[in-house]
Length: 459
Image 1: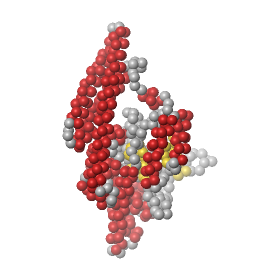
Image 2: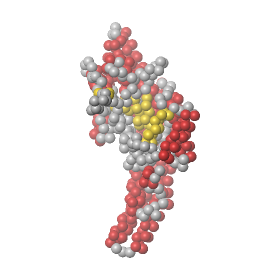
Image 3: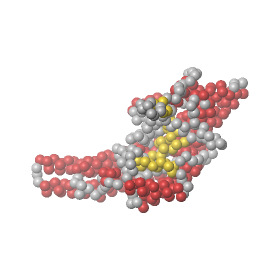
């Protein structure tokens, strides 16, 4: 992580950046990511609509330039099991007409009324519209990624960090202070000054984290357009700001001064949104139980998440805010569900083809090799392991075929998608498990497919 980039990759990234500069995309970040052969690139902040367009250009340009360097760009959210997947960290904030960041806490966030209002409005929007935010990031690839290897889970929660948590707790209890003075770190060397302690997020499991003067929506998938997640986030916070305006108008009309009205409205929002704030490990099984007690949705699969688009209340909200008409919400739901079904149908056929055309023939070659090698105890044991794996693989492929046929014969789109998520995807994972075992027992010369070490380390 953050180590030196290999020359071949560096040349590709530099050419990509040059091409993006020509297109007006201000890219800045370039470094290794955690997984082998995984790299990060990021543009500088822009207005949301421009950033969404530029993000599409980034994906297209990266793929085009990668081919020039005889590389394959993988935007799949989880191309390799057991190591980090890929996502987009959408850094999101709000600014006024003068370009000032409305989520800048300053040195004393507990006294910054403007910041507190916009922070509380964001909490309200994410809490109330968590289902729609989850629907915005749904997809067959992201289902593999969410909740594993530093990827955020499907439960939408907000991480604020110790400093802001103290501020909000103090507001809730009607206490003064809360943030404390800026913490510093001594570097232990007389010649070097103390430096301010970084208050930004170090909880990499959080799907929606405050990172200094912005929020980072980490659950967005690597291959999708960022436009829908950002649109839903904008309208969710916009709705909350409208509620704040109404609450402040009522209080000030009754004689309250603005500062008292703001603090009371913020206090109400802090109490109402306490359930969505979580500072702990989002991977812990205890969090799943705790989230359920708090009433937070846990939409693990895309069919569950996409159903949020057509809930009557959500359809009405999107129509009222002029994001989608009710007919457009229905259309978006059908298109996304159809895409999910087609993606998995293709994956099932591809997996079956890999097994019949590559994995099983490799296993048979290994068995033939062992048969010629003699009848020693070690040879017999190796042959028995391969034979057992072949039998298990045939059985699991049959189970997969049965589940796929059940899904395709469901007749109803919703039932089709649910069977794919609940039965076909686990059946595919079971087939893959046996294929991995066969790969480990087959001679390298017989295995026709690229191995992890070849794809990840021989760049």
